[in-house]
Image (cartoon, helix red, strand yellow):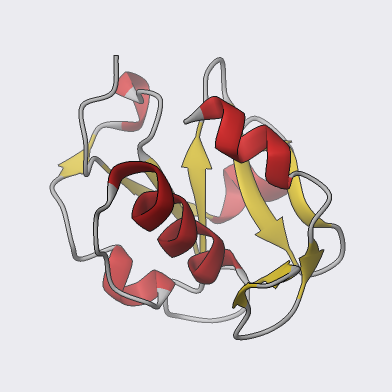
Length: 120
C-alpha cells in the first residue's frame, strides 16, 4: 500500500477528481482502496466515515481512515493514516500530500477514525 501512496504524492487536486491526474480527498481514498485492495467503498468522505467500525485515535493503524470537519458541521475531509501521526490526503491547496495529525489545524478539526482493513 505504501508504494501506491508514495507514487501519488504530488498528484494535483480537483474537486470531484477520482484519478487521471487529479483527486479530491474521498476520490483519492476510494482510488487507493479499489486499486490496492480491490475494495469498493463509498464515494464521499461523509459516507466513507459510516462504512466501517470506529477506532480509538490512540490506537490508529496503517490504513485507517481519518476524518475531519474542515468547513462546517459535517465531515468533509478524509485521509489515510500511515504511521507515527502521519497521514496522506488530497489537499485542495497541495494535491496529494503528507500531513501530521499533531499539526494544530488537523488536531483541531479531527473527528474520528475508521478501520476498514487490517494491514500488517
